[in-house]
Every structure is written in structure tokens, then in C-alpha cells.
Amino acid sequence: MKAGKLPGVVEKRSLLMYTETVNPKAGILGMEPAQVVCSEGGNGHFYMMATDQMGIFGNDRTKAFCIGVLFDRVCGKLAACGATGEAFTVSLSLPSKFEERELKKLAQDIAQAAKERGILAYSVQAQGRLKSGEEGVVQMTVTGAGTKSASAAPLQKILPVEGKSIIMAGCAALEATAVFILERREFLLRRLASDYLAGGLKKAAQTDMRAAARIAFDCGALVKTAGEGGVFAALWELGEYLGCGMDLNPYEILLHQETIEVCELLDVSPYMLASGGCLFAVTEDVCALLAAYQKAGIPAAKIGTLKEGRDRVLHHGEEERFLEPFRAEEMYRVLEGSLRN
Image 1 (tube, rainbow, N blue to C red):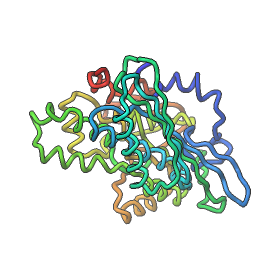
Image 2 (tube, rainbow, N blue to C red):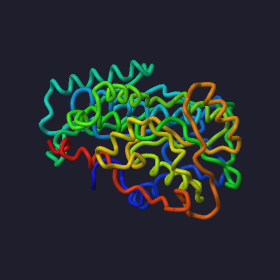
Image 3 (tube, one colour):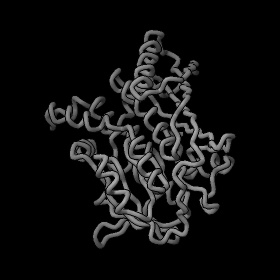
């Protein structure tokens, strides 16, 4: 299989079908679709657990950034269902030629990322693996667990879908933009100024979506955070979870100008790139949610609506195209040379 997140059809038929998930038709919502598990505990609390993984590679700055993004992804998933991460585990699968000095640096970066996010309780385990084609890549998995009070904000019933809108908070492809600037800097400097790239990197580092996720949860919205596969993959998965169609306006999808220009130079779509740093919230009260985001200084926009059926349509003026299941993370394709070195 290709590096990164499993293709959507493979994940559905060979993994998720054997995993117990919350059924939206039961009216229990407010949780990350198929990405957070929930168990009712005592004392009026729910136990929550979320996990995510990615390949950690590249130079030292890239590795440190990716570690932070992975923590942000998991923290965002927990926040999306009203929970705070209280304990985390980190699992590392190390390439056969990985040296001890590299492991020490990785452990330091993990400790720093956890400290910056207020994570006080975490454990790390690591093991070597047999030689593979991606010799320089550390496979890292982060799992976070916490609790949510049963008296927290009421969970909104999304079905039926009529009248429900999709709000995007944060910008697309931040994660990939930062990695590209760090790993393809020399190439990008042929067309873009150093100061411009530095500004783009600073913007792309804003991947902590806990505040945005909590705001959506408090407004009774169903939240889906984005990750590998980008905004198109996240929207497809949201539609699959709810079993509905969508009318989407791609011109409203939030993008930084630096992301647009970097993607143009690398000939890749920003909508299909790793997008830790943005989320989608399904709500009936668009004005209230947008006002809450504006008050918090978080960029947000309505990008579409839900509808009956299975068609998820992107409207480009009079032209229409349809969303498709996620197949492969485009960031890895662009960086394929780095992954093999």
C-alpha cells in the first residue's frame, strides 16, 4: 500500500466494518465520525479516546513540526466531542538504520511538543522494524484519552439533513504547506522570496484546532477535523458518516495565498493535501457559529449544505464535479524522493 492514510474504500471495507462506531441515525452525535471511541463511565462522565498516525521524515525542523501536528490532530478530535486529553501514548516504529542520536532528538521533540500543548501525562514506546522502501521514515502513532461530562453541551441531532450547513474553520493544506516550505525550500526560492516563505511557514504552523473544535461543540455542531487526504477527503468521510449528499462551493474553501502559490509551483491541488489545522462543522444555526468564530478571531466560512441522496457536488459556476473517495495523500507523492532517501 502507499504511504500514509489508507484509501477510503479499503478503510471502509477492510477496517471500519469491523470497528464499532456511533450510528448517527441513533441521534448520538457531536463526535468525530469513525475516529473517536466513546464509553459511558460512572459519575456522569464519558470516556473518550482518539488516535492518529503519520510518517515523520525530513530534516530536523520538519520532524519537529510533524510531531506537533500529530498531537494537534488528536487533541482536536478530542476537543471536537467536548473532551480534554488527559493521557497520551506515543508509539514509534523506527527504520532499520535509525541511530540512537536520532532517537534522542526525536524524544526531545516529542517532549517539547507535549509541553507546548499542556500535555502532562504521556508515555513513549519504540521498536525497530525490518528494512522497508521508506527507510528514512519513522512511523508515529499518537493516542489520546480523556473524559467528557455527560452534562456538557447537548449533542445536536443532525438527521434529517435538510437545512444543515457546513462551516469550515481554519485554512486548508496548512500541514502540507509547512512541510513543502521546509523540504522544498531551495526549489521554491527560485520563484518566491525568502521572507515570503518565512511568513507562509509561520501561518502554516497554526495547526492547533482545539479552540475551534470546542466552539463548534458548544454550539451543538457535529465536527470533522481534516488530516491526510485534505479537505476533500474530510468532506467525503463526513458525507459517508451521515449517509447524505452535499452541495459545495470550492471558492469558499479557506486558503492562504502562500499555500496557493506553493501548490502552483509544485503542481498539486491544495484540496487534496494534508490539512491538519482546519475542521468542518455541521450546524443549523450558521449565524451563531460564524459569530462565535469571529469573536474568537478564527477564520471561518460557510462552504456548503447537506442534502438527501449520495451526490457530493462541487459547483464551479455552471460547471459541476463530484467528490470522490480518498485514494492517496498527495504530499507524499510530491516528496517521494525524500521518503526514499
